[in-house]
Image 1: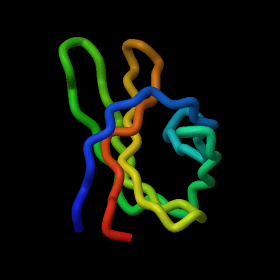
Image 2: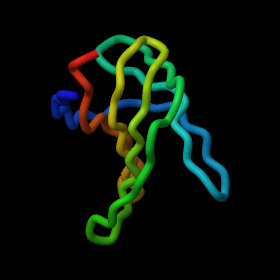
Image 3: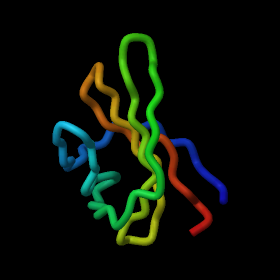
Length: 84
């Protein structure tokens, strides 16, 4: 698989509860992507913040790495898979 680094802020509709964060859909470049599945999830500590990473497949046949930063309470697209 080949990935393109994006690092763009995006709005994400997210499910939060006391135990999990789950992205549901996001908007990027005037298009809405609905998340079909989360292939993997992990987190990193960046200074005083945590970044939660989600490698997701969308219903629109694209795969993305979404990143949620707890310090700024912001989402961004880290990478997009360009092979699909």
